[in-house]
Image (cartoon, rainbow, N blue to C red; front, top):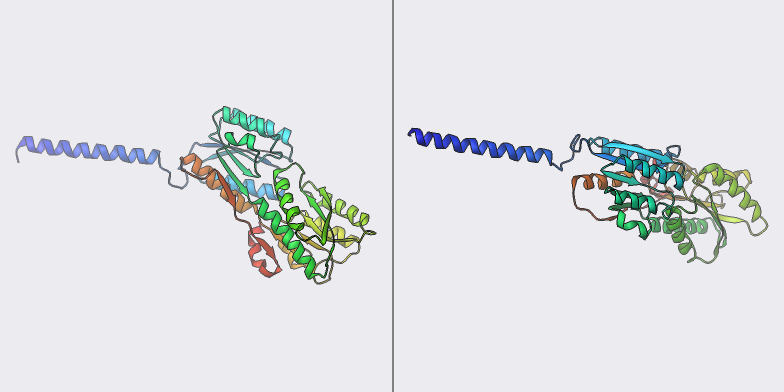
Length: 338
């Protein structure tokens, strides 16, 4: 082989190596593969509910763990279901110019101006937990929410099932909910009322705002039990979240009334599963619960945020799976324990 041929071969080899090196460099910097550090330097701002609420705290921890494992920096600002404060937090997060803003506002209507400001700032928005109103949707890139219609339907169906098993062919029902303006409450309660109406022998006589609080739930339940004692009593209670249900349970006990199917007593159902739910179900104090567990919900939201950061295609509206738990399938309650 002459010198010219050797030189040509060497030049070709060098070009090949250069091309491969450039290709590897590009693949590395633009990789969408999961793994620690693949999104190093990306920032996510997260406005959410207070960490003093166990459900909210677990959701936040799960988000921070999932996104942190990918090298994403997460800044979390919380409020005690106060939309005025939520809006202030959204503005603070916008000022930090995150790559993605996650929001879980207390009041979907009150959140609209702040959400629109995020969009105007060029920040991608992921709405979580509850549905946002139509006015906010042009500014939202992804919604990751629970199937609240399904949750409300399940809660009412379980309540009717339990009341019939306890021998109550008719009677008064009460509901103690989260904050009345909250999107979760609005959608879930509407489905609950529609489903209960299919069994007209049961009359929903009162709906009270328990603010996601067990102590307030206990007080409200005590008042309603007393109010309806001379009007046929109460045969069913919907305490919207598992961590509210202990308040309703305690109120029934303090009133000296029977509780549960075995005692042919008052039937209680709930949702928004937490560790209190399975314990009460095993004790026959809570007939059944629904899901919306914080770990499942947060993992679904984290998946959406990661796809958004990586530029991957996904559906705008994503609904998490819902299911019910009773004594008959108590093993499924593992997803409520955290």
